[in-house]
Length: 443
Ligand SMILES: NC(=O)c1ccc[n+]([C@@H]2O[C@H](COP(=O)([O-])OP(=O)(O)OC[C@H]3O[C@@H](n4cnc5c(N)ncnc54)[C@H](OP(=O)(O)O)[C@@H]3O)[C@@H](O)[C@H]2O)c1
Image: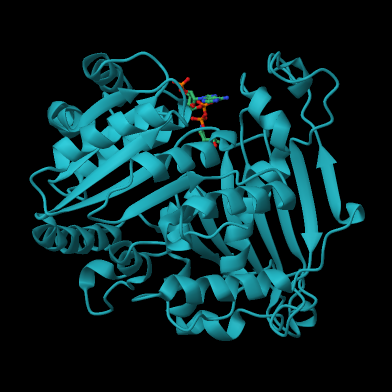
């Protein structure tokens, strides 16, 4: 299980309920599209608070080191996200971004590569400001991720950029395969830590293949870093609708009496991708759909649905309270048996090749690309309510949603001639994030 810590500024936005008095925040009829004036307002609030906090950061340099800057995650997510943060004014003016990898780039050739990757991402405003963003970016090459000489060079490069600041904070973003994490971490620890500011290591899933390898990775990382320097990221927690869970669940009185076994018939969490492995079968086959999606992203979502109210959902140390409640809910789920799951692997459909036809997938692989799991959360709130989790690749559409299905109104079966459809609260994570309630009216 991964846990994500959030900086206090982020925490405020995660949980900030929309102001009840603001006319801008009045809900439209469902579906409640989150790209609403309410969201714009929340962004403005965040922007103002970030801008305000920038004032105190003028004496603090922020250096972001992206390990694996030549790779897929850096290209698809890390640098585009950094550009968006920059365009939204969330990066302090004292920020610099150093890419680190073994591939052969100079500062200039790396900026040319980034320019091509990032063009169009921030729209016309983004393209106008792209050059100034690229000027924050530089590149350092190493023979290996545990190469002490290379990290000494990164350290002196960072120190020269940070020279005019009293405090130098450093973020190391590990966009590299997990088997590189520990060795790279140990080299960073010995050669590249800031001595006059904080250091944070950000690590993306997967944290190992199983409990044993995860424990081993944790032990190796903890030799170099304290727990509060390690940020294990599940990027699903950054999705707008997932970030809304706390307010949705604990900020709406009308949902509170319904959110339990007395009224909920079932909870269905679905993740569908409409593409197959597309040449990335080498990575996927090592993990499979359960490790890749269910035990991290969907389990995080499940824990937000099932958990009890935390002591606090904002302010100092709130993340520990949230984590404790998530863990308590997860501990109430009995281990799954093979009979509780349905596994599958996609096959050819028309021109779309099957899993085993991907040349990067090992011949005869039995790796599941689909899984349906049924289980219970055996506590006072949820005992007897089936939770169903489904995830698959190469399915009919791209979708991730949570569907809370409510029971039939008592007596409705004899009152009405036909069966009343179930009320549902649907929380759609992607595409087009939305929260909507299905209720019955006469035709
Ligand atoms: N791609 C995604 O969408 C995604 C999503 C979620 C999580 N992740 C996780 O994020 C991490 C990075 O993913 P990625 O897709 O960016 O990986 P990647 O492209 O395969 O690797 C990133 C970079 O690491 C270096 N590298 C690759 N294999 C290596 C090896 N065996 N030893 C040392 N260095 C190696 C390469 O850079 P140089 O050769 O230039 O050093 C490569 O450009 C992984 O842990 C992955 O599971 C990825």
